[in-house]
Image 1 (cartoon, rainbow, N blue to C red):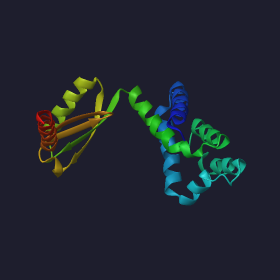
Image 2 (cartoon, rainbow, N blue to C red; image 1 turned 45 degrees about the vertical axis):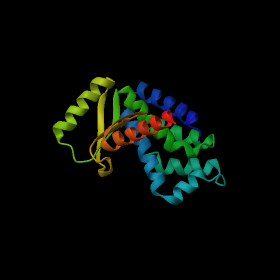
Image 3 (spheres, rainbow, N blue to C red; image 1 turned 180 degrees about the horizontal axis):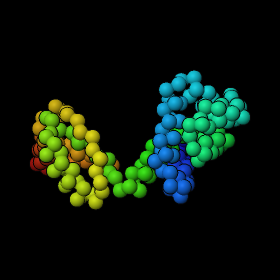
Length: 183
């Protein structure tokens, strides 16, 4: 499914969930459906198969999910089947999560460091990022020895590279550019 179409579906579901004051429940239900489809190969292939009639798909979805998900998610599933857009459930779920995070003013951040950072160092970094972004930071921290030293922070399309590896790369590019200028 085209990302633009998935975003439209996600916005519509999010708006309905917000109006009904059940954003978290709807997100949880979408995740349940997505996880169920991904964990069961037969069910997933059936859900995507153009050979299986829409009526059979709707009946099966009703049987499997009607007691486990709210009416909004059930309507979405049926709509996806009706419009032959079953392949969009993953993207719709991901976009829904992004909308919820935006609504709650949350920014997900990936923090990579050459060595494990102390909790004080992480807290200081998170505090500075919160000041810079104006959002509440939810981070995922990992160790990447290839950085040699320093920290690499990424969120959205923004990357702050304070690593030794990044500094060496920038130095190499500058030296290469300087050599080209002289030639």
